[in-house]
Length: 124
Image 1 (cartoon, rainbow, N blue to C red):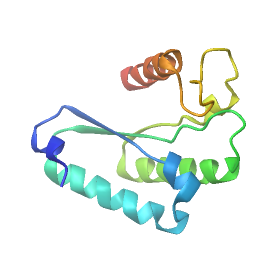
Image 2 (tube, rainbow, N blue to C red):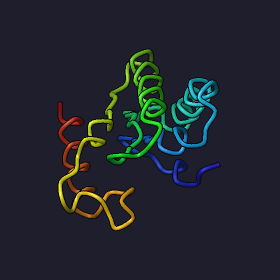
Image 3 (cartoon, rainbow, N blue to C red):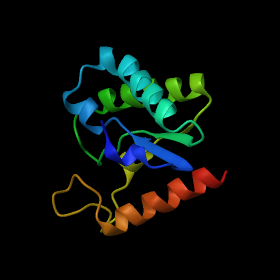
Image 4 (cartoon, helix red, strand yellow):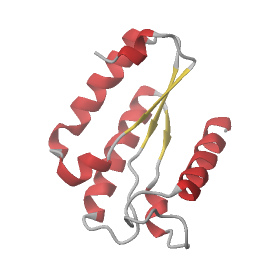
């Protein structure tokens, strides 16, 4: 198991979805997400758990699969009373410098924007 969860945390942020949307079996996503949440809850009973949806870059194919992953994760978060932060709106970001040279992953500037948005959602 994950050695990082042997320590105690105030907040645990779980990001999911990007690889699930590309390669995963979406029929298993809900059950696997619940299993991970149960594990985190057992190992971090006092932590605030936050779910974050997968990032998708502008123009990446299979946008419908990303939307389905986002919906499943949002539903699970709602069922468990967790904060959910969708990242689907970044699929529309085409501003220069947001993506790294591979045109798929965010650049440092992109990650700063995403981090700022996540911090804002956590404050709310």
